[in-house]
Length: 153
Image 1 (cartoon, rainbow, N blue to C red):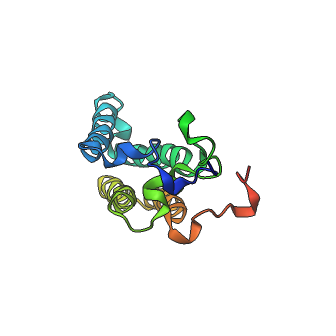
Image 2: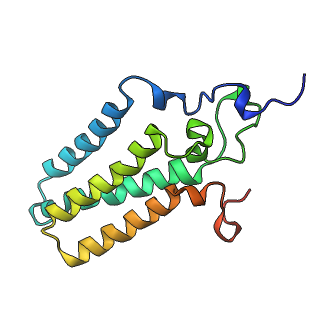
């Protein structure tokens, strides 16, 4: 038997994205996190709770989707060792429904954060920088690109 390639079997590492209810779960997780932040009785920062959600969401998704490589599934036999989670989604096909959803969600959180802050310039700038970082990482022209060789191995 020859070498196993990524196209010969479904990648169980990202298969859950196609499952029923994943999108609802993902949105619900963000909303629950936002609610928990609102429930914290620190009155002077309630106007920027969505900004906190946006910043944390950006950091977590960047690390989990665009930094971590490989698959924890043993049956993959190292086929995905050089690919990030984002690169594994839908076998690397661009502009799929999953990728569109995972791209538009940070934009929506950005808009909620900017609106809630009353379009405070400092917060909008911080949110815009975070949004730019995550959208650039999700761009098709960044597929398998490692800037300055960072995270190449």
